[in-house]
Image 1 (cartoon, rainbow, N blue to C red):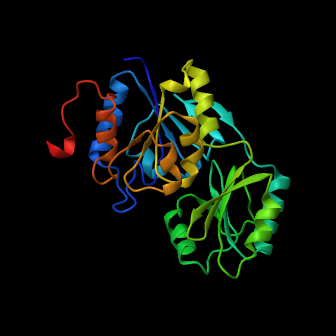
Image 2 (tube, rainbow, N blue to C red):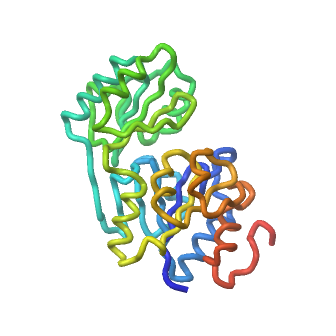
Length: 271
């Protein structure tokens, strides 16, 4: 088989949002694909500072982070784009004025506007990102950031905020009042193109695996698009293969069915 480049989302694709673990079958599938000569990349909305947990669980050939704002392959930085100081200042002021809970996300850490949040999800995020958060007051410390996210509710000025952010940023509605904001012209699809150019591979040599709305650009872009069993319906029109859920060994099942594992025997979970 010709060499392929495989791109995996993290949350809800490799990492179970129920158990917060990567199934052994998924780890084995990625290892097997690499042993077959294929390239394996993590392609995530998380910035590099927020990938610590997954870096302990899988060993890919590279990291595509922050929805296309950072691309690394075999230890080489291929692309990086951070927000300017002026952009960060304007974003922080806009988020504060709109009465939302925002988080600046960077390569080396994250920055929030206050230590607490009126949103339950905001409090959970502060807890889960504790190791990556560098400051609980972005007016005192606001380091390098590539993108940002925010939580909004009926007390927020959402429409005005989105109007203020666009067209400079793409605002992705992740559902349940959670919004992810990426610099215009950047996405998981643009990151894939950087990798394919580096390795001299065609778009048809790429396979993408995802489940949520920030995966939409790579599903629209790549013809071999594997959709997890639990997913956002917006991705369905672009899926070439629908697999099982993470917990049902969906990664292994898809890669086995698509011939990406060579002659490797059955799923480890079933052994």
